[in-house]
Image (cartoon, rainbow, N blue to C red; front, side, top):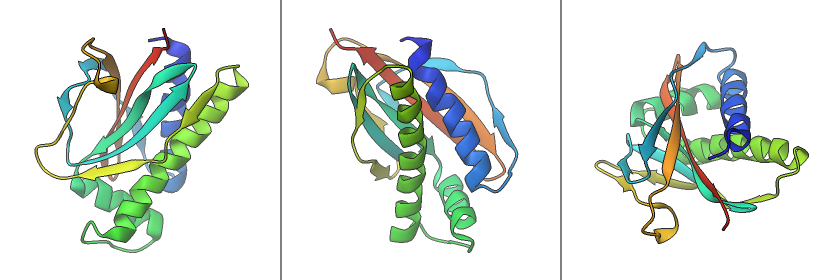
Length: 160
């Protein structure tokens, strides 16, 4: 996985979270690799990428973190993960990936995005990319905010 593909997602996630959480403290943890078959924390917004590469970006967080972010972004306390909270987390994923892909376009890479798909539940697992048998590793970027931890999970490979 080329670092040129990853940096825009990391930088944009950090900047957008600081913006939408109104100056909240955002700290980046140590990056690490994980196989793409992995459990998620409870709420996952997934955006597919196609074009020069294939892959996906996953924004993974607990229900508590998702509610805290949705509350902050909407300016009101949200106590249940309802349609408004779901729409807010989907929009956050949309903002981040849209801005990251714009940066990648400016660098000469061509990507298309799928609309965010939101998954919420216990004991979920995101399986291998594109149904292929070959393993694709995902780069995980933990971001710790005042609202909780979000893992930006990027799995991208160049088209053969």
